[in-house]
Image (tube, rainbow, N blue to C red; front, side, top):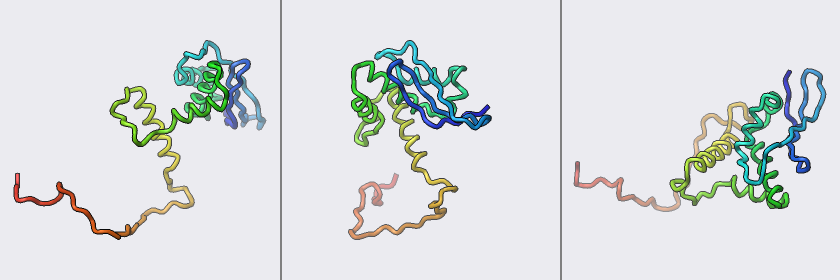
Length: 163
């Protein structure tokens, strides 16, 4: 049996992840409610999302749902358990998921760095032009305007001191 995920959401009372999917064998749209157990405001959202996605009971249904979306749903549930409103939880998640170009990534620990890299990879794949895209052009040649005189750099100027 193949299942095609259509929508995925979270229910706060009782805490559960809700999946609306299409069953290809019967050509019907169904709803699956997956209860969230042993999750508190101190739990790790990425770990909980991985456990749910790898759970044998739900694995076939969650193939079409990205791990990032499950993490987002768990973070919304975590915010609700902390007493935050839905808007505050969404804003906080969005803040965590955006990458500041001025941030020094050399100072991040391995877990945070891996998170930032996965966000950048996902953004790259989303914006990437593929051969099947209608506006794909194989060989793009661009002429850049040179309004100003080019500045020379000290490192590319040949000096009399050869090594």
